[in-house]
Image 1 (cartoon, helix red, strand yellow):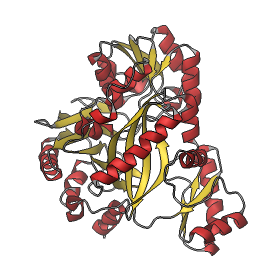
Image 2: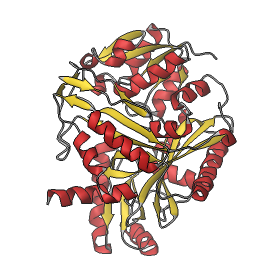
Image 3: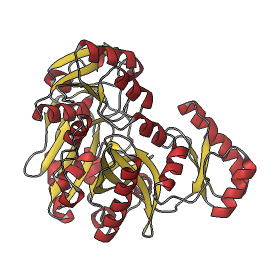
Image 4: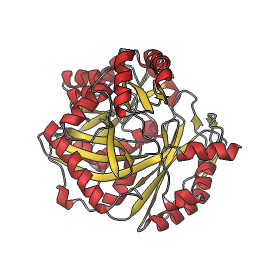
Amino acid sequence: MAINRILIANRGEIALRIHRAAHEMGIETVAVHSTADADAMHVRLADHAVCIGPPSATESYLNVAAIISAAEVAHCDAIHPGYGFLSENAKFAEIVEAHDIKWIGPKPEHIRTMGDKVEAKRTAGKLGLPLVPGSDGAVSEVSEARKIAAEIGYPVIIKAASGGGGRGMKVCEAEDQLETLMKQAGSEAKAAFGDATVYIEKYLGNPRHIEFQVFGDGEGTAIHLGERDCSLQRRHQKVLEEAPSPVLSSEDRHRMGEICSKAMSDMGYRGAGTIEFLWEDGEFYFIEMNTRLQVEHPVTEMITGIDLVREQIRIAAGKPLSVTQSEVIFAGHAIECRINAEDPFTFAPSPGEVTSYHAAGGMHVRVDSGLYAGYRIPPYYDSMIAKLIVYGRTREKCIMRLRRALEEMVVEGVKTSIPLHQELIKQDDVLSGDYSIKWLEEWLETREG
C-alpha cells in the first residue's frame, strides 16, 4: 500500500504544493507539463518531468491518455489531481484505478454523485444536510416550474444540474419571466456543459458563502476541520477567504461540523471534501459538495496545524486519519488573498514576463506560488499566480499582518490583483466582517460610479 512516487496531474501553485508535501513524506514526484509550462517552478523542482502536449489544456492537462501513459512510463504508484482540470472527473478516477495506480482523491462513485447538482442535492437531503427549498430534482416542464415557484415563493433561481462558475444560472423575480429564463438557463448549460438539465431553488436575498472542510478514511470514519467564509466573490469566483467565519458562533460551528462529519461517515467518504452552504439569518442551506482539495485549503491548515495534502496522501495509501475529531484544535484566524495576473479593477487578464518578484515574508505569512523573476506567465490557463495566506491570534491582528504583507509583496512586469486586496481590507464592512456574497460586486459598481 506504500506510495513511493506520485504523478502530479496539475500545474502552477497547487502542483508545487503537492510536490512539497510529497517530498516532506519522502515520496518522489513526477511533474507533467505542457510545452508552455516547460520552465514552470513545479517542473524544475520535481524529481522527474514529462511533457504531455501543447499549450491547450484539452491536449495536455485534460489529456487522460497522455497522463496515464506518463504515469506508467515514470512508474508512478499514485496520481494526485490537485484542483480543477481532471480533479472531479469520475471517469478519470476510474481509469487511474483500473491501471492499478492509486487515486489520491474520493471514490469515483462519490465524485460522480456530487458532480451532478440534482443528485448531489438529493443525496445531501438523505444524509441529513439542510437544503434550500426547491425542486426535488430536474425540472423540464414550465407548468411544473410554476407550481414549485409558487410553493416556495419568488424570487427563485434556475440552476444548471452540471457545471458551475455561474453559467446556466438565472434569477427569476416573477412568474411571467419563468419560461424565458428557463430556456435561457437550459441553453447556457447545454453550450457550457453539454447538459441542458436545470432545477429550481428559493433565491436567498443576501446570504454568505460558508463551507466546511471534511475528511474521511473511506471506511466510515470522518471528521470536520471547521469552516471557511468565502463570501467575497465576483461572478461566483472567490476572491478572499477566511477561517473561521466572522459570523458563526462556536455552537453553530460545532453543530454544523457534526452534521457534516456524520454525513460523510454515513456515506463512507474517502479523502478531502468541502461541503458548501449558503448562510442567512442563522440558517444553513446546502448548495454543493466539492470532491477535491480547495484553492482556499491553506486557511484551514493555518488554524488547525493539519497538512491537508499530507492527509490526502496518507488516506490514499490506506492509512487511517492522523487525528480524531477531539484532537482537532482551532486556534486564531487566517485569511487568503487570491492574487491573479489581471487588472485589479477591470479584471482584464495580464499575462507576460515577471520582471521582478519578491514574496512577502515574516512570522505567520505564507505564499503559495510558482513565480520567479524572469518567469513568463502563459495566457492559456487560469490567471491565479499566487496565494497570500496570513495568520493572527485574532482577526484584527490577522488583518494588520495582511496589510503589511500586501505592501511587501512585489510582482512587476504584469498587472496583479494586489491593489484590489489592499483596497478591500480598508473597507469598513470587510474590517467588521459584515459582508455577503453580493457585497464585492456592489462595491465595485459603486467604485466605478
